[in-house]
Image (spheres, one colour):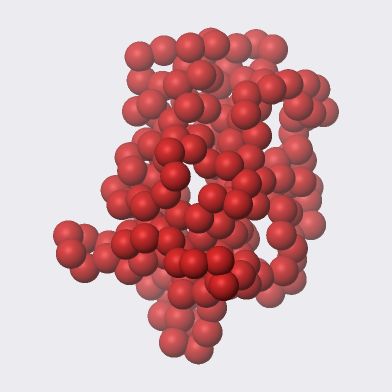
Length: 192
């Protein structure tokens, strides 16, 4: 699997919304009508080494790989990078093409509670051929207390009638992948 040529365009509205939502508390932002959403935050470690391991793991696609996805992408998540993840088992994998719409190297930024936190991550949006329309973001955060958190933000809806008919299965799969991302984040920071 390799990302397609530049003729493919992002195919959803509200581009970059996950970056804005990253600076809001869970439950306080306005998600687009007609789109389901995910906003999950879990504590995964403590201290600068844990934050660095998580941030590098997010920006280097290790979160996806740790969740069991195959990844065809540039070495690092940067704006404009095209990625095709393979979702499934063995050779039975559905290609899911995306493009990075925002990326943040580790830096101080306003956090969801209004204080400055150390933050890093990226958000990518769906391209034609993806079973959903929407955006997903992976964020590492460390507050002044040294607690390291992994936050997953997403909004999506089925990309067409065939995928809408499979929506109950898709929702179960999304819940499973969310747990896999959280497990991968904990694994990245396991020693810290």
